[in-house]
Every structure is written in C-alpha cells, then in structure tokens.
Image 1 (cartoon, rainbow, N blue to C red):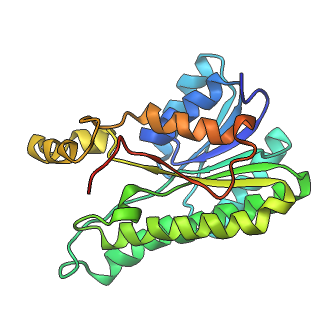
Image 2: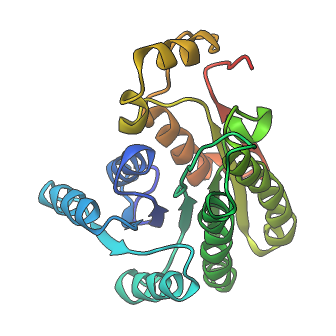
Image 3: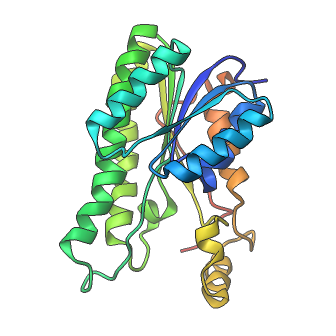
Length: 246
C-alpha cells in the first residue's frame, strides 16, 4: 500500500495508460480523481471501480480550459481535503507530415499537451506549496526525444514537457515538491491496436525487447515516482520504452 490515503489527480484517466494508472494507484491505497474530457467513458470506468470498493471520483475537464481545471482542483480539495499527487497524463495527437499539417492541427495539440499541462501544474503547485509536500509526474514521450515521422506538433509538445519538468524541478524542489517525467515508448493502447498490422510490426522492429509496452508498464513507472521510494528522484525523465532504437 505504497500510496495509502494519498490523494491523486490523474488526467486522461478514463482510458489507456491513464486508466491503468488509476487502477494501480487505487490498488496501492490512493484516493483518485479520474479527470478526463470523455464524460461517458470516465463515468462508466469510475462507477466500475467504485463497485470494487475503491475510492475514486470522475471529474470531467478540458485541461486546455483554465477555469475548468481550477474547478477540478477546488472540487478535489472540497472532497478529499488535499492533493498529494498530480499525474499529467492527458494528451492528444493529430498527425500529419510537415508539408500537410495545417495551423489548426498544430495549435490543437499544443493547446492540450502544453497549455493544458501548464494549467494543471500551476493550479496544483499552489496547493502543494501550502502543504509543503507533493509529487508531480509529467508524461513526455520517445517522440519528444527522438522525433517521429508525421508528428511535428506532438514531438514538439513532448520535448517541451522535458524542459518544463526540469524547470519546475528547480523551482518547486525547495517547497517539498518532487517533479519528474516519464517518457513512454510505443504502448499497446486501444488506439495503437487498431493500427494496421504492418505498422505495428515496423514499430516493434525498432524496440530492443521486440514488443510493445502494456499500459500497466507505464502505470508502474508513475507509481514508483509517486511513491516515497522515489523521494530523492527529482528533475528526472524516466524512459520506459523497451530499449527503443530510432
């Protein structure tokens, strides 16, 4: 029970890696706010977990909207009394090659993956500073480290996450707040599983372990960084990519 009675907000928590993280945190004793844009999926997943006896609340939010983010923070404090952990897991893709990507595609991904992350972290950092304790975990990507074909917008945002993580680590460490990031590799989410088999085979060929990550693999990295086992890990980007070869 590494997170017994801790209060965690996990954005993008209704599916994929975020949902796996919600389950792992709950199994380790945390109280979880599942924050997601998808109200139907979030409500259904939260009810299913509540039926298993877990203490989880779904809150609908568009993280690109600062007012909605602030409302989630207020509701979390009202309901649980504190916020110990923020996992900035939410993110979107809208792929196209450089010559075909339009301005709206580019901006849409920045609005969620960078501005949304800023909104969530700024709001939570105030609460954690007053507590003198907190764990902030950001989600980068191997695309932000190595680049990826057709992902100018996404790769740019995930590279930015690395810089933001290291900046916030310098600013918030003295306030008792650990800030780290996870850089997942190609992960077997429902979105990836729907890709053509040849594309998945090509992705797998670039991984030293010759297999995709499972969402639980990434969730376990979040769990480590959220736990007190990682109390001296700070400003770090943890690669969970199976030894990817770009």
